[in-house]
Picture 1 (cartoon, rainbow, N blue to C red):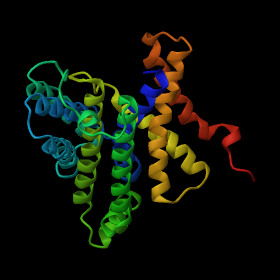
Picture 2: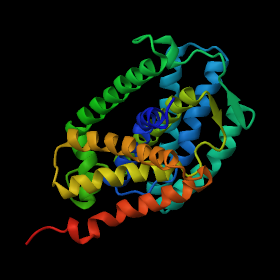
Picture 3: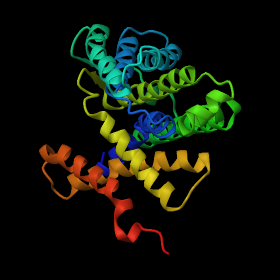
Length: 290
């Protein structure tokens, strides 16, 4: 596969991760580092279940539940034990490193000759195109479900918790519960990204989640820059831009490799790119006209 096709597929895989960070950081204003561990957890659970020939229909619900539990624990530590949100996420992420090793039983688990989501479903005769359509339909379904959730009364309460916790608490909403559910949902979506990526790359690795939060954060920042610039209020369009941000982030990295930049410098390029998009709203040509 070319750099760009691979980047497109990886961008679609990272959509769940980006949506998860969008929920935790942009809706609840919580910097959740659990992401690094829950992403790997999703990949580890997927790899173990597939290699043990467990029913394929059970894999995704199990991955979703595993990620949700990880996020809920972070939420519990933050809301009930009053631990700083960042520290709570770090504690759970650190614990998940050992848990993921216990789940896999080793540091990496290959999925060679193992049926995957991309082989059990058939849309196109070309394997790469088939993978693209499966991922596209999968991700669009997730966006539709999350968009619908955020438009319901429950979703509005979640959004209000992040915007004005004091006000929504005065209306009788349990904000602690909202935060726990929100972090559970965010990490469940992150685990789903691990589910998709482990099958795409053909293995799960204990270190696959290290630094992964920067990819999700970069994707969300791209979306947030556009949302702020064009004053977008639509939930659906905001989620679509988060997806676009995830794909765009990967395409930039693919372009970097395509022009001959040493792969060893990819992390440096990633950091510089995130720095650039964080700085964009502060540059003069992004300022609002008087």
